[in-house]
Amino acid sequence: MSDVFLVNPYIFPVDLRGKKEWGANYAINFGILSIANYLKYEGISVEIFDAQLGAESIKELCKIISKEKPLILGIGCISSLSFLPSIEIAKAVKKISSDIFVIIGGQHTSFFPEELLQQQSCIDAVAVNESEKTMKQLVIALKENIGLKSVGGIFFRKQGKIISTPNNLPLDLNGLPDTDYSIYPNFKDFFPLIEESRGCGFKCVFCTNENFYDSIRFKSGEKVFSEIEKASQLYGSNDLPIVLQCSNYGYNLKESEKLFELIKKSGLAPRLIFSTRVDGPWKQFIKWTTKYLDQIRFGLESGSPSTLVRMGKTNNPQHYLKMASEAFEAFNKEGITTVTNVLYGFCGDTKETLLETERFLFENKKHLSCVRAHPLMDFPGSPYSNNFAFYKKKYGSTRVETKLSRLLKTYPVNPTKTLTFNEALKQSHELMRDLNSFDEYYEYYKWTSPGKRNGNAIGFCDKNKLLNDIQNTTAIKNQDFHF
Image (cartoon, rainbow, N blue to C red):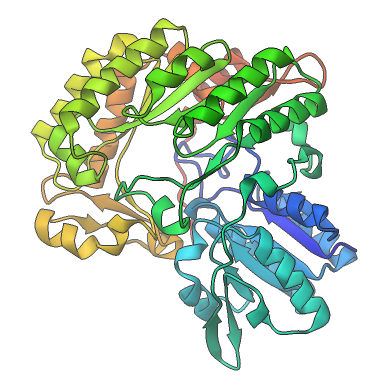
């Protein structure tokens, strides 16, 4: 019997294209992998169950739980789309044994722990920050019966009251054990996610990072290289596709340069992807990364100066947009797939500000491999969500409240009285259609759904299979989910 059983819930509700369950974008839940890796290093027995295959996988989970009866079941709820499956899993486990301690954590549930505990009796505790230390402390507290107040960073019930404990001090990322991907079930079905940093030093009002992490912390170049080297050996691939996990790459320049010097000396040839800002220090690091970087993703978010300021992206939008154009051109000239994201329809946007964004994107199209455009959503924990009354009063912004959005605690947003969420959604899809060809979309998508090549070695998904999947799923009539 393992002390701890960690579960990655599947994505829900139905795919907008009509599939009953999300059939793509499989990825390692790095949060629970990091926790499992830490616990294993500390001598605590731990297992991971990946429920990404959907509701059917919960039946398999229940069979295992009935047999093993772990001390703790931890659920890693990383987004609102995995929230309902998380609750479904908790309820199923509690039916098997009420003695199993169920704790949920992740960047979604961390922002409404009291409400969650009040509404869901199947949840015993909510972890509200990074949870490696928290889970170790919880194992000790339950085994030694010393009380949950000894566990940092949780909310729990006691005698009808909800009690919170202070967060643990942030981890020293360089002191963590190197990640053992073999802990994760079927790990070779996924690209390895190698953590370069945690947190973000910026304050975009639509992002939850600022309120989830206390600060931004980096790993040393030696530490990141060690993880790359061990992952390459484990996967049996010299040119392994690797996701460098970070909010914004390049803000630790000295260590970044050291990392690529070590890669060069090693003879490894990893294929990397990472994200960063258009106004970041890319001019300094592009020369190191060119040989190994397959794709770079920029969070542009808007081409309108006034919108960029409202978003909290920058106080100097002219410089920001100039840097964006230069970044797109520089990486594209090096043959690197250059992707940018746009938040289409922020509060206060007008037809003119949206046209400014569109004009900017078309002016830079020749240097962009793919553009991703999405309308505004209100996620719990973001500065925007916490101050929604301001945006409602100043711009006429309103949340789209449905039974589903209330359950998920995540709301589509009508940005202004004259721009609805549905209009923004339609226009964003039209914008992507006009800007992206299928070949360009594939270059983006290949990093979201791995395929296999050369036996056990992992590679990118097959282009023809993707085309067939798109043709098949778009032909299916959309289905509503009934509660």
